[in-house]
Image (cartoon, rainbow, N blue to C red; front, side, top):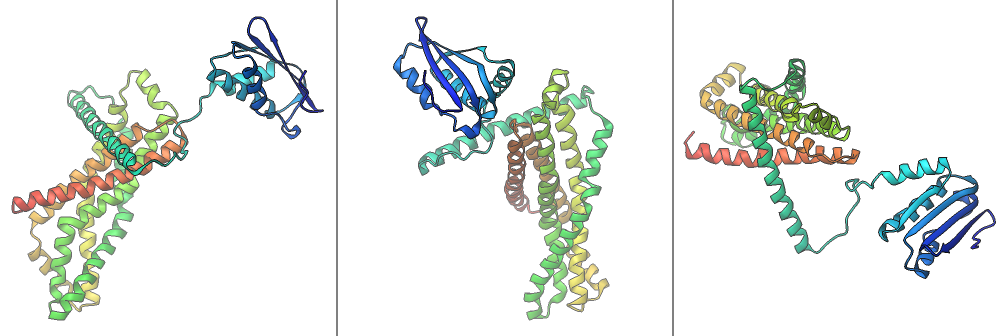
Length: 380
């Protein structure tokens, strides 16, 4: 007998069948200073041929979670050494809780910080992750096109109510924040231009600066970045939560494609609404610039809007609308892709949301640069 405390006892006994019997008795509570894994390791080291561990808790008078912690630790050691655990000697309550604790695997994506590695290894890891993300992106885009093909063939199962709710969330509900940001951006552009143009007495050309800036670049980009942080993150959180709750698995089991039922309505909705939001952002930005021009530069409202109309032909608005359509697709794809690849923990939902916003903003900036170069080459 190996007595470790006045409150509880821990006995080890070996038999000829390479079995280690672990008999527990007394009061197994956390406050009694329960043993750690060193005792069981010492017993296993004494006889390396142990193939089975029998646990017996019939003589335990009182116990709490401390007993379960010890049994789980014994089970972990046994699994590492390929030793079988026999639970016949456990009381019913202990056995049920022990089996429940042993059946749940440790989460690998619970946000634990990994060990820092050498910077060259870090570069290699990041490059490999970039390659995997690129493959996932093109695979996801391929699935979206396949889903679009099924939509045109009438084979997609959609709920119109959900589609219109998503459309409303992507459009009308985003107008307040789009209004505020666009007016402020227009005012900032006017302030920046006014500082230099007042030196030459050319305040009227503030209308040119604000109109061209909003129509070609800022209207589409600011609206898209706002939607990336607002709607793209919401897409990732919604789909990530459904992944955690196994709702997406349930749809697949029921024979319903998650791409058709969940992803496609979101991509279509944001793609439809982004050009309209861009037009609205352009108008609000021009109005914001007009406030500065009228109240600070003493430009009449009529003169300001006539100058804007002459300086910004419709082709410049068309450039911004085309860009906004591309940005809308990228934001929707980033949000849905990150949500669909979410892990199985609550922390993974937060990670997916963060990745969706970062990915969408990066794609917006890169695609804007490429589209600007393309329009410049085309002399548009």
